Image (cartoon, rainbow, N blue to C red; front, side, top):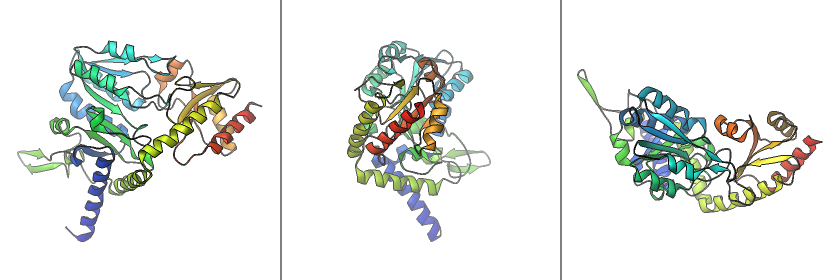
Length: 349
């Protein structure tokens, strides 16, 4: 190989090492680069699901899922004859109803797929309790960690799950890159997701054999620049320290929630007042549609999202069609929260 290709490969594989260390993977081979968390979930649904889920088997998710962790399992169930069961939301706790979730697990449960942190409610899943219950019935566990990996220390070995997925653009990296972490024995048991160059061991006219993980799941020319960018983002977050990131965001989250609750006619969805939450808040304002509210706020230079946030069943459970969502990160300040509150009040007037 020529020198430039060697440098590109080294940078790409160096990014894999950084991500592996960031989530405390047992091996660098447990990190598979994907186009994002959505592709990572679809990879598991196809490569593991089609070979391990059959008629009458059950997949347990929740009604608070991002669509990326719901639709692939619905499609898998349609193809295999499996059944998707949904843990309901506890509206008082502002999170998944844990008792209902655990009651859904049984001998037919093959997979439990849940969010580590909700992208709308901001609540954190009690992972140890879920993992223990899933293991008791022999089920695998996939964790959507898009809202946890960028915001708190995540140790995949301590979590005890089988797979996690995360997106680069949510952790200061570029778009078009994410990763799947899977236990090495799980990845080694899974068939290729896509086929072509790079993922093979040997190709003959009689057939082909495939590379071991992670190469088996990275067919074609990889997203080299994006992966290197994700590695740089990991370097940055590692220098800050994820304990420090989490502490700062927890402080911001408490301030955001407390200030939003001072606004008349505004409802904050998620955990109750004073309960721990991620540094985001979805809210509705009496008399103002969420989309209109976001537009008016934007005109004052404050950016919030509006809509169903790829979580339509969750919004149906809340009894609303859309919410506005303020999402904070390491670059935000309490002064910016104050500006948000001012713009909401001025919009109400």
